[in-house]
Length: 266
Image (cartoon, rainbow, N blue to C red; front, side, top):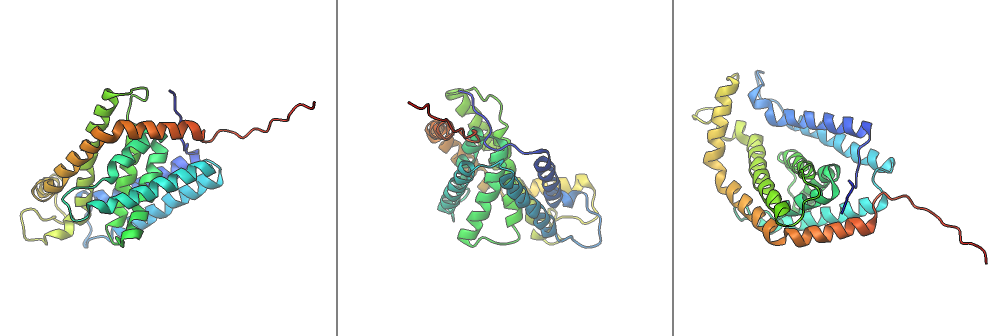
């Protein structure tokens, strides 16, 4: 069965997406390249990038790149992810949202996956009161994972091979999310007096070495359970969820032109 992306960015949309991603990437990676006298206000990066990203969604809708059915599907899946995300609150790495995001992006494409990751994480924060300096990081980490899931090769694969590829991706994505989340607070987490602290004006290699040790010393207890839990959900529920999503994709006929057929007169 051949499928098409539900969302296709226009050249303007692609440019806006690229700019937003570059700005947000700067917000993640500044500790390795920044040489200023004082620590930057990294939230400025993310508010600028979020503004551009939501502007992109508005442009896509106004240009009919997202039709009514696509917007409805995006709303339903965003609400579902936002609803299941708190189920793992208080449990180490138990986050059931990722398998839904990965499978949805697999079926509906990378552009849809990016927007779904963006909106679902933002809606989840609104529902749970999770608004804070970490939100921008979470939003773009989820958006990038959704987009990457849509680019997984082998669109014609089905069955065990497809699930195996998705499990590998889910495990890697779980670790990547943990790394990105650590980057948000590492420069401020330990002060400046430990062997794992961020060193202002330090060499890239020195700070990278310190961050890697910090991550593995503090976050693997979250990342490994997240990877295992996501892999298990994909293994046991992936095939049935993919089948349901693909039926939705086929029956909804996203972005299909509406044609009016004149009945022949008797």
